[in-house]
Length: 428
Image (cartoon, rainbow, N blue to C red; front, top):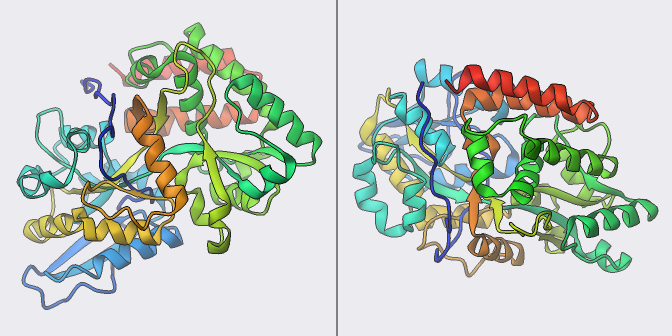
């Protein structure tokens, strides 16, 4: 199967007047859908089904609140656990999918569009296009030049910490890897677990790999590696894992038995000193403590690349090629693309930013404002490992491989040889 040409993500959000949300979304058609609060059953467009992976409490409430504003028909939401959804997406889209499903921008959207599993929604974009920057439109466009995705929200990845803990201990955000290691040693001496860490769900460790690879080898090499164009046995890749292994003693132990939510709670409870994660980490903080949350971008490793790249994935919606209610589906995604919907999302979900340029950012928390600023300053924006590569490579190769590394960080060479061998059979 041909794989898609690399997307240009340079200056992805530069010049955007408003920035997007996190929330982990994605639909799946197993089980019977339940009506969302809102959606009037007397609407002229009938019932629209929506497959959602917004299974955590905060994003789930956010989606429900947005759907209440949809008056053109009823909406039945089928919420499925995030990981289950992602692992079954291919079978789901080839089976009996919902009309609309939550999914991701960029390469992962293109992959399913090219399989003929997503509906061309270029006509929707003719109506909503003025609300989004060209960068967001590019990330919603298939290799055929047509649009298949409507952006809702996005969120940057960074290293999060509690300001009060750092002020009390006199910690400063590190600028280099050496400073990060020195800070971790100091935290350990102070009785803190330096770096909160979890990989029970398989995907969080991808964020660590992404940033270490972009900091070490640069954005272009990272994207080429994700698209099967560089070798996993290249010494450049080994250096990434060597660096990671050197940091492992500062990571929260027994990570394979811990969810990201539990790791986030350890940061909230002042048991850990910092946590590399998406801004959705804020969902796990009590409202009273959210103003105490701050972050810094992962420090420099290779001066040639500095801190010019970050992960800032875009979440949104697609329409299934098998949609039964196409008119209703297009009306719903048009509603979800509106600034009014995204204002609801960013108000209810503290870890999100709005994709629409017309969204109201005046109510952004200090954290959200800082997140928007971080994204606007980045030279290169990646979408996250499991979105920048083929879905089958991400799920069947990278999840078990990274979990294997987390469990046995000394066995690097055989692991990289195994990844390369499996990659060769997938990227043909």
